[in-house]
Image (cartoon, rainbow over all chains, first blue to last red; front, side, top):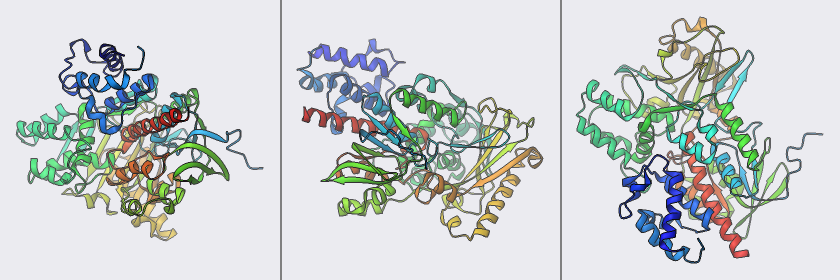
Length: 85
Length: 477
């Protein structure tokens, strides 16, 4: 997957989790937490969905890398490079 | 021949969950939904663990732990259970306090509390905002040195009344005390303050029934009257459990039983490192409770204005010791009205809960024990009289449960109502590092206690188990 495809994939997961938020306005460089009503369970859901859909394993110590859309895509790019969109 | 409660159980499962408390059922449900074969074993004759109820003739039904939970429960039920379950969650708007310091009714959320603290308690608004923001910003990774008592002293020095308002409900929600790390308070308090207190419309029996159905639909093989004798470990890995005399294999075992029962009785101390055992031995159990269950006669009602949850106390001051003491001065009354807690005769039920010390009950002779139970019922009726006038004439059934009752039905060590104290969380999380495939999900560490806490902990552990099983599958193929 390309970084653009990964962004779309993450956005799709977020849509299921942050149902009350407007994701169209999402700023990739700003932390999710500052723009969306996300709590720690929501971040866990992102991790679980990524594993379920794309079999990507994210160890707990790497959770902070999912801080913003920009950092998430950057972190996932090498992990998801071999996955076809 | 006795009934075989394991009839047609398979010899192998991907996952075995021991205990069907809300945490255990949630883990089982998520993993079954992810495609794993799951066996859920419950020692009691019904599912639910501490999320339970009992019936008495004449259409009486009593909820044990359905007192109220934060709004986060809606999201957790929708996501990890079903929309249908989430849709049954409704707000309890009448949270009432009555003690020598103050009497008030609140919706128990941030706006209402800000108004109360500002107008009735005369606290500066900026200070209130600062406190709420600080509490909300707390998370599990924070500094654990500051205690809840110190937190209050920092923000509201010398204000016993403010501390009481902020603390009393949380003591009943998760058993935490002023001496516990502040984050155990901050997280739970903020969860409640986000929107208020909620309940499950229909009662605990309806919730557990729907969860049972949902698990069935997702393929969980759940069994009651199945008491696990041991969790068997081979070469540092979980191999099987022995239940009702039969050995059943599994790649992962999640215990929703008490943490120390899991380590010392089911697995056995010899399977763990010495340092880990030392840590495990130092884990303190959380406090236990007594309860009195009362039903009103058919046709008798309690005014809705009496409240849904009433924190009542005759103690002039507020202290943790006083809340636990047998010289009961504080009680929480949960009022179950027939519109939220439907029952065939439209009765109103009242459950009084008090935190308690196990030793105060376990050391009594049989006669003294029975006498103490009678006393507990009588004292509770006396206390209730102030809120429900002539309650003795209106009530046709009252009975008590003690720490020994909880111990008997849930097999929680010393009847613990909220699992373990804070240090239990580290031990619970450390199990899979000791034995591959062994996990614990259940009330522990105070944060992971209460209905929402234990469900969310069940989710966290399901995530860990899924991760392990997927890794194992990819290394085999």
